[in-house]
Image (cartoon, rainbow, N blue to C red; front, side, top):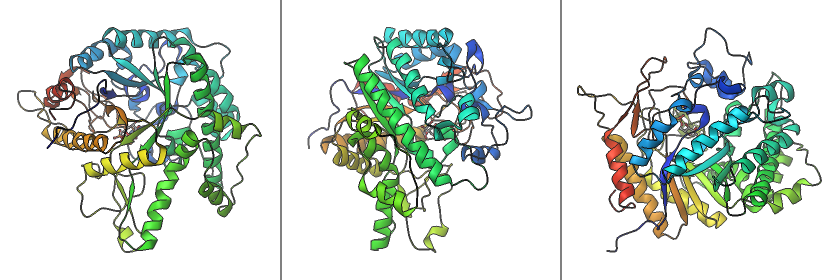
Length: 477
Ligand code: BG6
């Protein structure tokens, strides 16, 4: 048996996002952004779906993003720990509202720009490549108030201005870019994904797909700007991936599985192939959606396709047309999956399926024939420090080990994967639940769901394990 290998120069690392790590939510001129309006508790889910009563934070609520894990001030300490693990890459996002606090300011906010200069310099000093997402669940609140966010065409030009500003500024520092994080999230959690707010009587689908069109054009314009300004950089899209399995071989289930996958592929088909697929046009007709497109849009999309496909993979999904089967939906999955009887789930109801990772990677490769970048994967779990304060997170090691083994198989299958940045290498705020208790890190952050704790960082058992994975370029899993 041959030893399966990872490619030379494989980009091992981790991924975080401004909105879940930085905190300092009003510091140095930053404006409010969507996550600054997401409290913990039961309301959070409704707000993420677009039903929000106030576009200013309420004094009686707790907003975990306001302080998050204070990465804004502690980034140097955190990067030193990432360097100790041997990271080659760190995926971060730039907060749009740090650069343009209202989204339409006449000049960018220098203090915000200077922060990311310091951050990228610190990474480069440790030989860690910054991998930068332009928009990770992030729209300045002023643009929601004034334009209704991405439902308005105006956002396209404002996003392009923001993208050009940061691409230009960091052209010598950042060579890997991504446009919209999990762009397909717009269909599931539209406020989180795109700042969309709905009123009673709104045609939600119409608004979502119009907003999607605007994001797709904005994404293409960011690709264009990146290619013009930084010819030696690569810019990708980013999909919340995880293939749908039909629950049975009943053709109705199989067809539905294909349709469910297309709901997500729709975005990437446009970003990677440069045009709307036939099935999307049919979907618009069947649902009587009238998507306004400007005459120049088709060319913009066609001429500015992405260089690579970034994706997150946490779970596969399962679908059925049988009313009895769909009574048994998984609890934690925003993508609407029925429980798969062959698979276990995490405490938050996310199905665990390492083989599905290999399947998903192969399907993306077969469909797009472009390099793939795994920019999120991991297990959200509650860690309990032992009496001596250590965290023995063998369950996390087990999850990651089994997923990395399948990723290695996918590479052996011929899938071109350029890197792997696991989600939350340091514990950060959970996007879906707002909790700190749902942890992904190799590094423990002392903070709880209510905002108590010293914010001190400490190494978990998985820290040394991942360090060895990277040191051996994946030979020792
Ligand atoms: C992805 C997001 O959906 O999954 C991240 O891009 C998010 O922002 C991650 O944190 C894990 O989800 P959660 O809800 O467990 O934080």
